[in-house]
Length: 358
Image (tube, rainbow, N blue to C red; front, side, top):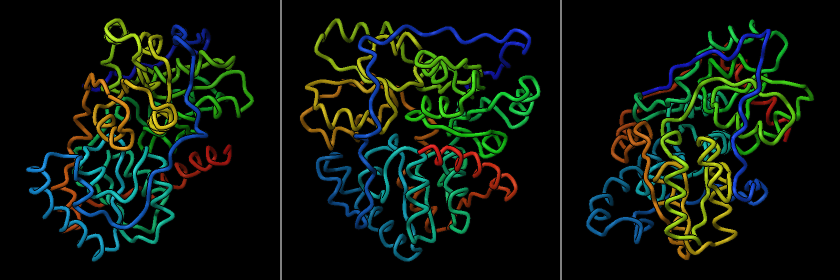
């Protein structure tokens, strides 16, 4: 169920969010070592050897072959978020990574068609950055509880309530919400974006936990919105404390969309790309990625020396994208994503403002 959006405190008495406890080592993964998603030759079914069981691989081979053929015929690329299942991530994707990385890289290709193996707000972002390309999403029901927690009207009301306060918006939002914002951010650059504005306070929407995490690292007052990702919100600090008690050497790597008690138990806090890069650089013997569970399946392929403990919270929206409906999307050229040009122009301005920060 999507969290119920609630407006923050009244403008005459703004309060900064309660700071979450500091993490065990206060280590934040660095973007400098983030592994870039790959763009290379179209994948072959053989790429799934050792990724999925042999019996499943043989079932998938003809589907992958169809997708390979259709990509060539349509001049298409499949872009896959880190939370996709391994058959998609390793079997048919041309670009892999987090949502903004995918949209930016897809815009740089000469493809005519982009198939988003992700959720709707990601497809919208891809369309905003590639207005002349056809963007398809295999299942229109692939939404997001966090993006659904706030609307453009909500943002307009907030701006009226806090006149002159800049609106920093997480990219995990609809095009309509981005269009009402001054600047966007990702989970990896949120602190940098907030501090780049040179102001005493900002509206940071919609993820309350990412906002609270940023608030622990800056003197800028952060006014929050009561949004959350249903996947990350389900993790608990007690769950992680129990894991650590049973295995003191376990590396706990958490996404900043998790609640404060979870981040307090973490050794490292970082975005999906930062989590991947940290594992690749440090090669811990055992690790837990406190995020959507398919990510561990995908990271494990590139980090065979690390054993992953997997407390699994699955995103029901991401799992609406399947290798079968990717094939159907390319066969039928369905479902095309459109963004109103006026909205896209304003949303693009917020994205460009972030990119200008570097």
